[in-house]
Image (cartoon, rainbow, N blue to C red; front, side):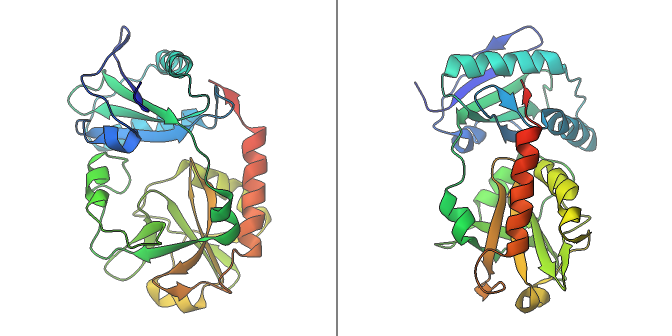
Length: 274
């Protein structure tokens, strides 16, 4: 069986698709224009903030002019059925809503592999990507998958960061970006996709550090004390270098790790059955 398990969900039932793929990434090239969300399950059949993902899908569809009528219970039942059939255990999955046929969603599963502990303990390196922009930053559209694939990621770089014409650091290719500057946690408050993991950071971080929804710029890089990125499938990942500029002392910062521990506790206490 292919490592990715793919079905189309019609208003009536799940049905096969006319292609196979090795992963979510490989499957994306077969999918039509539309909107999507990606997240993972825990303990096989548990999910985190799935309704928030579906809320964002509905918002993205509205922003793209896609007439989505989402039957959440039908979708949840289909996901649970597919996870059971795939036999992967916990999965990472994408739900795609085609613009031309929004009542025929595509669901793709792959085995979920958590981030390697070394990424958290050592931190990751990033680069900025001048000229790379999201057509509609507030909507999660799958044309962005093809756009970001055109970027040549340098060796040893974990994530690329979008910047605007003024050098403001907006977000990662598939993540939200945060930096600690002058004792404040800073992140872009506009012109970015609102992340589901970001919602959790906004919940837990204010008990640790003052939160300011105002982005930093590339000019601030030498002064940044800490930095990290977040996404639903990765949680909090410390950033130790951007554009070959060391962040802080070049190791994951203490407040970043405190936010990560609070994030993990929040996740553990908010899992729900699919």
